[in-house]
Amino acid sequence: MTSVPSEVDVAVIGAGSAGIAAARRLVEAGHVSVLVLEARERAGGRAWTVDADGLPIDLGCEWLHSADRNVLAPLAEKLGFSINKQRPDWTTRLRNSGASEAAEADWNAERDAFYWAVHRLAQQPEDAPCSAALVTGGRWNALLNATSTWANAVELDCLSAKDNDRYEDSGVNWRLHRGYGRLFEALAEGLPIAYGTAVSRIDHHGQTLAIETNRGTVRAARIIVAAPSAIIAEERLVFDPPLPDKLAAAAGLPLGLADKLFFHFDGDMPERFLIGSTRRRETMSYQLRPFGRPRINCFFGGRFAASLERDGFDAMVALATDELAGLLGGDVRRRLRPLAASFWRQDEFARGSYSYALPGHADDRAKLAAPVDDRLFFAGEACSLNFFSTAHGAYETGTAAATAALKTLR
Image (cartoon, rainbow, N blue to C red; front, side, top):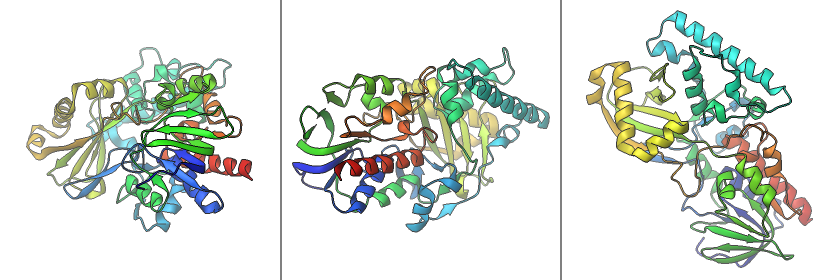
């Protein structure tokens, strides 16, 4: 949009998965004026696909998690997106990386025992960190922590056992050949989105809500806030009067960090998954030749990812190259060409990758999602009780927030 209207019925802040879902629901209702305010010059938020050497890469979310019950899967098919339904075999990463069958069996048993220990921990009155389920001096503790930084974007000592146990996963994971970000571009097409419009303040004193942006003030009867929890917690979006309960809930749901690095790879190998090291928490997970493409995707998270962001792109490339040489042989160095990497902590409109609940804050998701005076509504993956950290979880909360807002207008 080239202009920003001065007044609408419902304003949506953010054109990520939740914001797009909310806007689509509102537009489909047909009897309200809608405006989406998006600070970026693109839709999708933390779903972001770019091209490198003519092929798409997902700098943000990549997998249709729980695809057999994922609301985005049928939407993708309806829009003509080709879906790769080959499920990733993450369980063979150790064997692919040179571990013995006995070591892999021991790891699988220890990992399953750990998850059951977290489940039992979650039934206790106190909301303990997941690290409390680790076996003291356990052989696989470093790898369990590394796995947590890939799955949860944070180490186990910062992760609520109760919240982690509430996550629902069917184990079915699919991918989109054109990229996840492209799906949200398609879902956003035709929606009333004002790009390059950053919101700084929401004044909810009066009967009409006032939204201050870099392109002027927009007034609305209802607002759906679909911004990441970090944006609220860091008060990059200010509420006037203040909403201390919202700030506290958002602070209890910080955004962890999971970044990616991409190489062009000259080599004829089957698609498979590898692990840089089983003995260090500071290691990467590798996806060789995804879709059979000449690529190696590197995935890393937590404090390790934060340190690499500070050190920069060359440091990421150097570490990944050394680990890959250790896995595939020194000859691999001449067959790698770095392409791109994500820096989600440095992204001013995200400030991280996806949310986790701190120990003692497992109930903050419901608090963050709760409406204020039936005029301010909240959506996003951090508001999802069971599908947090996922694009489909965010999408469902956006639809729910829009439906709730429509009921109050009627």
